Image (cartoon, rainbow, N blue to C red; front, side):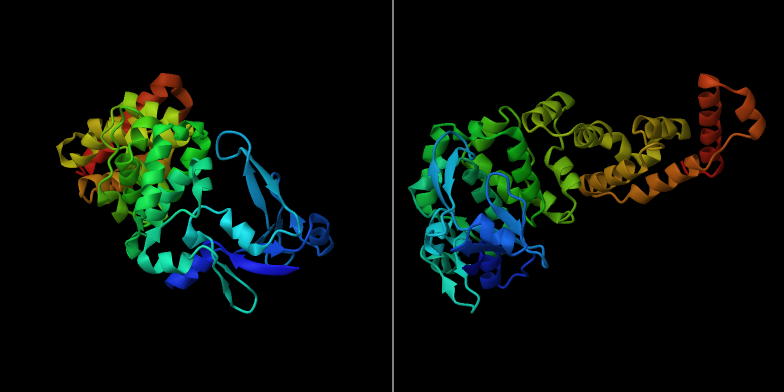
Length: 358
């Protein structure tokens, strides 16, 4: 039994990047062998295991044979006779198909190191076209490795264009498409992901009629702030188009509502000093700020980026001022239903006027 570090960990190590996750391939072993060694099996379709101490993922070396449509239509063979070279050759891109053994020696049957030096995303074989998800992965790696100025190898680009003619992206589930979008948004240059999809006309297939904002302004947002970058990408869409896009990728309601909120209310938000106290309180109620403070904070952050106006703290101070307002105990006891809400709102308006915040 031999163990190899594989995939992105080796690629990033060779590029001088910090390795955040390590994945391993085990050659010459079986499921029973791994369980006897106290590994915990977590894979359903694929036999993937967690190391008993490090909790890192270990997978048995495998080969794949195309059987059905989509990125899941494969038959896998996990024979202990499968070599590390065979396992690497089934992968998508040469730069992701380099392994390192326990002594630090590299196994590179597909010239991945050469493509790393040339800054090419290059497919390994014609089997690349058997998995439509690989098109989205190529776009994501353009975003993920943007600082190294990678480009798609001309042969790979041509192969992708041929796949696009067959509309293979429609074979991918909306949930899996969204996963790739979220991964791309968590990179330093998500605009590169969307611009490449535009270049190969994948956007027209995945969300027809929708024009996303692929400008580099979304690259300026905090790398980990996926939600805000999604809002920035969908900025400018009307509510109908926003909801249509969200339906195409099965975006959960919580995330969809934030996007709609930004697009509906950003114009009001950016004109802070033009509003009366009453209008401001109406705005806070429309945005549901009093019940969803965290979303309101996030809403402010997105609006600041999109408008380049530092108004978030002003709106948050206004919200906190209104939030602290309470009715007297006597009023709370005698006022019910709509009368209670109206009295509280009027007192909040009066407090904002008193402090001259608007």
